[in-house]
Image (tube, rainbow, N blue to C red):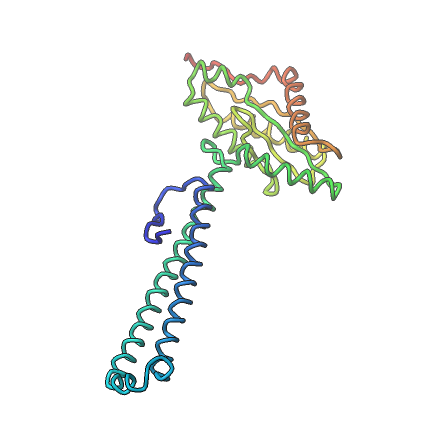
Length: 277
């Protein structure tokens, strides 16, 4: 791999898989440099051996005729040794810098791959990876774990009547409300479309209901402050992990509970036409 061709610090993050391949190529380049260094050591050792003990390589008559050139040969070997070490040091320095930059880009790319581009919170890829690990941990520790699924009431109507730009703004606002509502140890995820999931470790169902009630108060306070055509409404469902439950079963249970709550909150529409559209 040509080290000089490495991505500059300002380059846009590539796919994690592409960056991982570049890092593996750097490992191969590192091995090449070690081989070059070992080869140079062998050549230098042979050269100095020929100067110190010329009779091992040349005939005595030839040795006498070359004695006058020994200082020049010695100087040439020393110069070659210095230049080769300068080259190897420079290459290895560039290698270290490039590897650090690629590792930094890999971290950014992995974070980007697990973050929702619109809202800035975790995405479904992160959710799948995290839930699988969390469920495996819960099976060992028998701990408590509850998730909340929420969606925006009448979101399709918001998009169709007011537009997708306004719909995107609502999704960003909901993401911020969820982040404010939950603890630092909890995680908020955009599951897809207008659906969000909150992961609440070490939380039982009664504690999770307190968090949902607090979220609804946040939504009510938001609606009281905003004089707009949209009254925000959220429907929330809860599910607590039970031993032997799969990731899909846990999410489905929260989803079913969320839809069961919708008729009870019909008095909290997602779209209130306070102003003509």
